[in-house]
Amino acid sequence: MLIEVMLAVAIFAIAVLSLAASVENVLQAQLWKDEDEKVRRFLDGQMAQIEAGQIVLADGETKSKVEGWLPEMTMIARRQQLKLKNEDNKDIPGLYEVTVEVTWKSGNVPQSRELSFWYSPRQGI
Image (cartoon, rainbow, N blue to C red; front, side):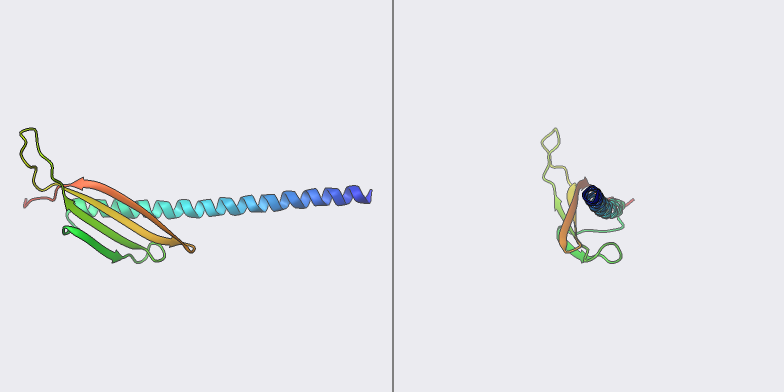
């Protein structure tokens, strides 16, 4: 009888430990999901501001520290003019490719995401 009780307690303890590990994994996955959502919102906002002309980029690379979003978050924005031609084989002026890259630390692990898009700056309206 004592052996049966000890075996039942051991099985129950293993089940509880497994459940605790599962809960920890779920919490970590939720943290990663929340970080990813914050970064996606940040990148979407940066794209909207660049397209609206609120952020003016020069050709090349611009690096800046981002406060208030995630730990040690930095943004690198790159802009380069595209060399495209239309159907008449003439250059298409004023068309740029922009890449916005965000890096941050999740725990002690460096993370990064980037967003690339084309845009044409607004000419004087």
